[in-house]
Image 1 (cartoon, rainbow, N blue to C red):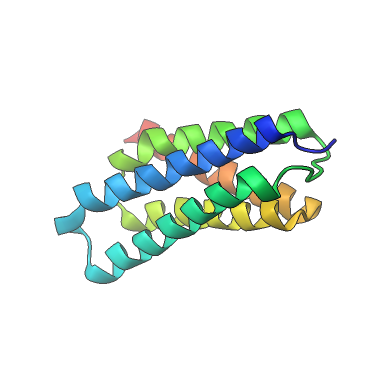
Image 2: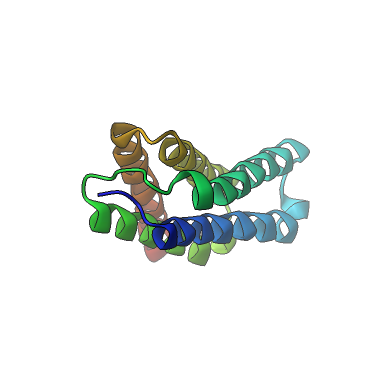
Length: 137
């Protein structure tokens, strides 16, 4: 089933939220990050922001095999990421989450159903691991 304009807008908004959260993390953790880490987070932030914009135009009509489940998983993963990114003290974990969403954005824009499913699962797994780590802390 193809993604509707409204669903594409929801995906774009979820990616925008993740990008904003990364930007906030970068500035709030400025003194704790190396210059290289700040640059990498900023690069990932811009990539996710670009995908946010692209999703509202290019994702319309992309076919997801299990549309409701995939969209719910993506939205849930993005919501979880925005909740906990600012509480993480390990920049490698933040970068892993960011990379997962960059990969997911590229997959969605490409329209490759297999890549979308794989990237969505990786993004959800990354945010799930993050949630589990926060629960254990």
